[in-house]
Length: 137
Image (spheres, rainbow, N blue to C red):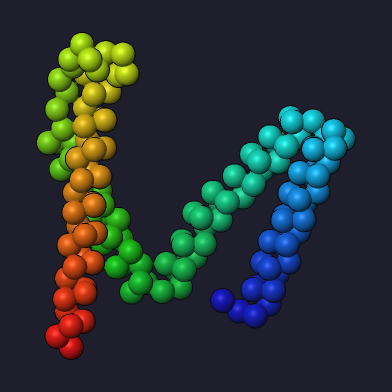
C-alpha cells in the first residue's frame, strides 16, 4: 500500500472513530436519539462490508498469484460445505419442533454442525502437524 493511501485511510479511520465517539456521548446525554445512532451503525456496517469486498478484489487484481491461492482456499471451504450438506440429515423429532421449523431447516442446522466439526478437526490437525514439524527442523 502506498504511503499516501495509508495516510488517507488512517485519517478516514480517525474521523469515523471521532464521529462514533461523539455520537455515543451525545446519545448518553440525551441530545441524539437512538434512531440516529442506529443509522450511523448501518452506515458503518455498509462501509465495512464494501471495504471487505472491494480491497481484496483490488489486491487480487494486483497480485494474481496470491489470488490463485485465495481462490483455492475459498473453493476448499465451499467443498466442505457441499460435503456437509450431503451428509446432513433432515430428521425431525418432537424435541426439535420447538426450535426448528421443518426438515429443510433441520438439514441446514445439521450441515452447519457437520461443517463446524470438519473445520475444527482440520484446525486441530493443522496445529498439531505444524508443531510436530517444527520439532524436527
